[in-house]
Image (cartoon, rainbow, N blue to C red; front, side):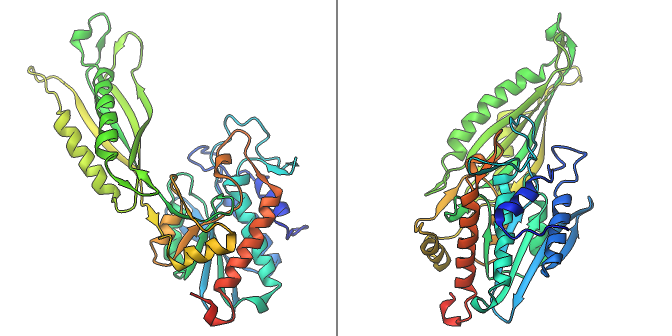
Length: 394
């Protein structure tokens, strides 16, 4: 590598210029692999230990960088390097252009900017070993945007951290909880017929229309009755619908995809089971008297994700609030890798430069000053919890 940048802006520019669309959006993409190649070479040149950890059957890997400085607590910085699709963007997605005090491009906020701030933090820690003691792991995952497979594997690949920060863009204000998720498909199967004789068929679209209205009521009344302060209610949304093969054919199939956002205390599979039980009681399968096909339903589980919450009064929350000047930590309605980190037992918060409102947008960007501020705050936090003076730790 001819140039090994130390500033978060230059690092972020380099990362944004490397396409890393999750393969679920683009089958030809290498996902985060090319970004990992760059980070690994960067770390090696700077004398920072780097290791790739494979998982699964699709050639995916996590990338783990480690800095050690004597004995002490283990602090994890975590970020993901995959992005969503660039479809619909109105700026060049991989330019890494700095203009008007902002860095532009896909992933600049979500979350190559926060990753760059973490890498720049490692450089500063290398240069000031007398200010901290312990181990810092900066671990990067490839599949946060779709299935969170990377973080699930990572937490079995590394030692359990004593403290952790996940770098989703939060304007460097601590986020102490995120919602979980349950995603599934519902398919309806009917009987095709010529549209000139619709009574000879069973329309899967018509049947699904009734199911959609009932599901919306279920979301509002059954799911919506489960609330938690700060998180609001459990919610449900129907995101896609597909059905029919031609305007002159009674459709024999229709499918919808459903996204439910969960609050702490809700187990995804229990919510899924309860919804199916309600649905099958409300919409039993319809058999034909002559033995022909009637209406059939099928559920397909797509993804589950747990919620997490660290109490506002937890010492880690309080300390991060003091260090960031944001004493009241917030709750995020989105899902992220933090819930899987938090499930290991150590205190975890979301904290990163940039604004989540920029994520996935047509003109994604992050403020240059935000990147530098991110480094300074990460340094303060790590030095606080990895202080050479043991009495200053939690």
